Image (tube, rainbow, N blue to C red; front, side, top):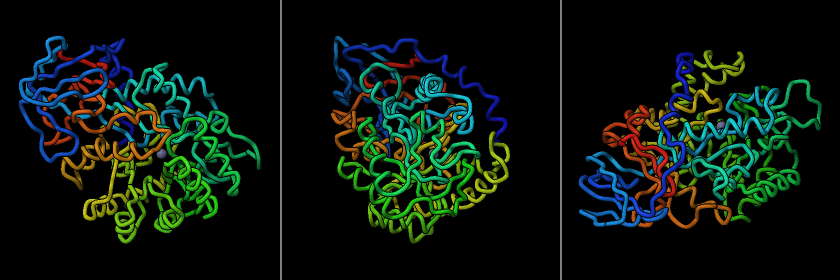
Amino acid sequence: MISKFFLRSAAASVALLLSTPLFAAQTLFTNVNVWDGVADEATPGLDVLISGNKVAEVGENLIAPDAVVINGGGKTLMPGLIDMHTHIMFPQGLPAHETTWGAAASGAMAREGFDVYMNQGFTTLRDMCGPANLGKAIAQGVLDGPRFYSSGACIGTTGGHTDWGVGTDRLGDKSNHAHAGNSYVVNGEDEWRAAARQNFRDGATFLKIMVGGGVASDFDPLESITANPAEIRAAVEVAEQFDSFVCMHVYQDEHINLAIDNGVTCVEHGFLMKEKTMKRMVKEGVALSAQSWMSYDVFKDPAGIPGFGPEQIAKGKLVNKGADDMFSWAKEHGVDMFQGGDVYTYDLIPFATKNISVLERWFTPVEALRSATSTAGKWLMKTGPKNPYKEAQLGTLKEGSYADVILVNGNPLKGTEILNNNDNVEVVMKDGKIYKNLLD
Ligand SMILES: [Zn+2]
């Protein structure tokens, strides 16, 4: 039941974050159970030395006389979590940001959303429709928040899944979402190419396009194809010129294949695919960006979701049915999979870790964790020259990795459910700075 989720206050959970992040030239975590983001097991009894914003050393009995020491007490130190599909710019839901909130209010709400993510241990977000400028502000240290990879405004056609205007709009009217930099409603390959170029100009690190209908929107039945091959190819061509790639919002099997035929390498959602398509994705190196909690758990009862009318409820139920099969095939065929919450309201952000724990229906805990750490990090590294964090690896805890780590009370490799209690995420460090410390 979705309704009970809204009883929990996101704001209360943020109170655990430090008002000013703490930075020391060196920090030494002692006696920690280290999971590196990749291995099948964690290694107990290690020390981890952070120097500046990188992991300097992982080993036994490390000595660093000038370091600030954090006694890990045998708890698990692991890479900070990565959410690969958020919608930080419309935390009050799509309709409210069309009719009520402008870009300034949305941006201020996004800042609050960042803290809710950080409190859960998310040190990197990938935003799937919004101004790339926000990521630039974080990368330059002007704004505090998780590392932020932006798609820029997502690209779609009139009546497609980026057309979030009101029902009375006429052809050519610009929606509030478009004004806010969340979406482009464009038609024909030239307009798609221009939108793609504008996104990279703004600081996007990859592109998001809408190839089929969506769940939370008004004009696009799931079975509708909302882009033609020339438009898709135009976006892919621009992304390739920036040595990056295109992700597509898509559900139907036929649409997934249409997009892969035209060079798209990252499937968002994909819940109505066939097994044959999953095999094709593995063979051709296409990644799956999956939202297990939203699509499997929440859509079990879409009637309780605020803003969902009969059309959206019917679409939500259809998606829920497909999710079980898709995740089973993802496990069986070993597709490159990363997780993302697809949370489109502020009240849902505190549940972002559930997209890891719900995966345990099909995957082992370590597989679920890799989808939110090393596999996600691998794909973030594929974003070419616009990647603001090229110096080191994200999603791993190894010598030389970025110092994005979390200390967890317990061992999530034995069950990721413990991550759903924020109090178990006792220390959160991003870029060598401590944002949360419950040990003091
Ligand atoms: Zn989404």
